[in-house]
Image: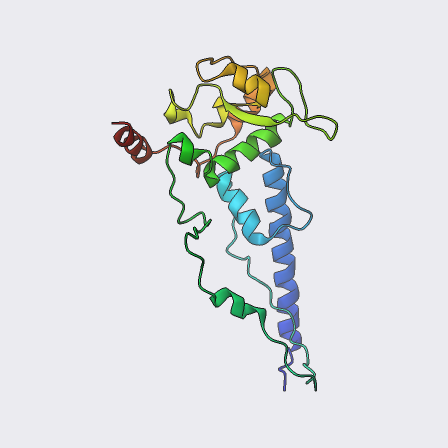
Length: 222
């Protein structure tokens, strides 16, 4: 027999829903003000918390809880039970399997590791969203009628300035041809003043180069 909610519990449920919706609306507004405009129509709460942390935005979430729905009466079925698909998760992983979880990712400033890391992919997406998906040198833009590929370039190259590897103000959007022509020895900045100001104004506390990363890079190069 399923438990029914009292009127007081229903009222508490409604109040929690209002608090949660108000927090979500405020979080979405602040994230968009920070320059991130790639949110889905109905983002999950954990995605919003991740972006708030990424952009170093403080927002009180002490009153935000997962609101439980009212229990519904379950009707017994005469059909045989369906095999659960959760059993597939218990299968042994294949030999050579590597987890793609952010927490256990080995991060390194070595280019072969760096450009495959989650930190770089997050930073690359922010640069593309902020500066627009167009080459700042020649103006090329990917479309169905061409083969343009965009790169996010380190203005001061990674191999010469590893301390700027995760610095947004050191990034610009170039097409593949312009990026290859620029190479690693050219430090020309093709951005306009508006793009420089936008990238410099974004503060990401969770993405930065630490002294430990620098020391590991120096040890590997010796």
